[in-house]
Image (cartoon, rainbow, N blue to C red; front, side, top):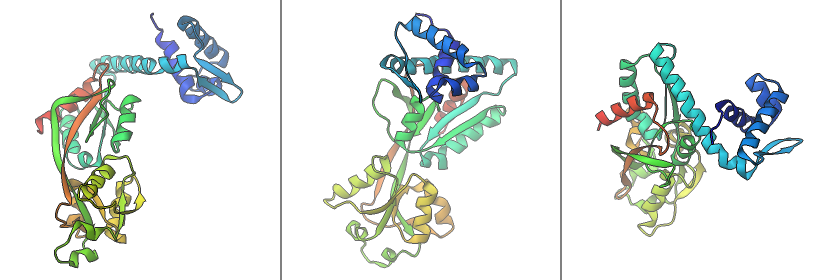
Length: 298
């Protein structure tokens, strides 16, 4: 079956905006014209793609099955247009990458800087987040590469061989935290203090949980869960909280004398960072350029 890319664009616009009216306005066409386009696509598929309600449009099971394929085809068409225009000097191209904060703090800026030094017309779309956010961004085609600790082992996402780094995570505390005065500090000494961490289900939370449970200890007192790295570091430096993060991420606070590693025996973990991509589809040339630079940094 051959699909018309304009019909797929119309289909995706309705999915994104939730109604014919809003999608038609975004596409700058009339609502009846958009409705006819959707109906022609449904006739080609041989099944309804949307359930139509007074409040908007909801995907049927057929629409849900078509959605990832339509998204892939649209992105491939956009990439083809972008690369052809770049060859004509009409466009700059975009690197779309996501990474955990540790990579954003150190590895990724260097690689991006080297790419832009060679191809200054490129633009960069950067997403920072932990594993679940990066997984969604890859699957939704918001990014083309993701640098993270781990990704689900699925047919949709695959690790890129020979492209990995290591960092080390530590318990961190403010320079004046009372635990620094304690001699022969032990991991269980941290249990009575307040902690701030990324949410449950994220890699940092899971890593710290393993540190404690592997020694037969209960979970620490996690008072605040947040995805904001700035908030985590601020709560550590200024409000007496403990946290857990890779060393590159708190180098500025260390240099300023605000926070640093808490010397707890067993309170560290070396981890592996890898680069991931969608298994299907062609990797855009801007992403290939970034990947080449990342490999040179190994």
